[in-house]
Length: 228
Image 1 (tube, rainbow, N blue to C red):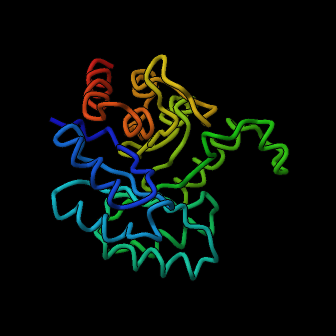
Image 2 (spheres, rainbow, N blue to C red):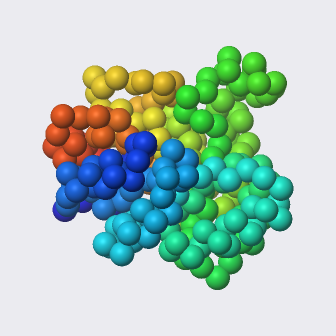
């Protein structure tokens, strides 16, 4: 039985490869993330197909545009019946997304600070705040703007959980089993650490998709989550 808190990232170059991974995972996973890599090559059709099979779908599109465009885009995306959608955590963007999803079951997540960014990278981009402080500021704004949750590093999950209302989603990428390669992720944690800190959902990509046996890898992560 799949753990609904585990989201497998289908960060692959084609829908054929994504479908093959879903097939290999079988009952070990019931929630999938589709991101920008698959969007131009059939990502929305893949999402619809997964929904027809009873899976949950997270569209990680990180929408970031003028409010009118964001609102209309979100309204269009609701037709795919996806469960989660990401937007950038800027108040005008978040407010527009909240308006666009009105009347649907779609939940909007605000992306706070990418887990591949650290304080030095943020300073280079011109931010005065470090990662932690910027995340917490954006979390407060996400709550005020009517978001259903945020995407943030597991390292900030505990502080986020302490300041958001009940039912607010805390979705954490950058999750790596003990001993796994961190890749380009900087602010990471193990599945057990992330859940213990307050994460509601974990996004795991390469530790599953690049594993010799993806199903066994997903089952091992789910077992660790069950014991957290």
